[in-house]
Length: 160
Image (cartoon, rainbow, N blue to C red; front, side, top):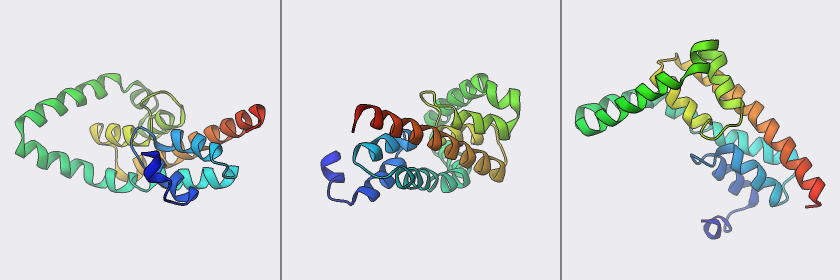
């Protein structure tokens, strides 16, 4: 995949990587540091790249799920199990409320807790659109600041 990305300018590489699930901002920012982008530029591009797919995902997730439920009973059964687990494990969302819970879910860097996962959690918990979008955006900014700062200082420490 990296060979394919090499055709694009460094800035677009970071922007594209930040928008991919599983890589998201937490992979794009260290990548930006490694390819030599300035701190602010890597941070800005990764945040925008990570947030860009979030709005359509939040907006269209529930209607898409309803359509898929009608089409495939197997899909419905699978996602009902996923939803049960999400509801069962959604401690931060229940404990602190939707806005703070989603913010913490995105801002605190644990594996599997990024903007995409927060969108799914927001849909499963039926959090209103603007509350989820705002909380996920603020969590993404905080997570981005944390990762950009860590990446920058690690790079300085090792002389990259």
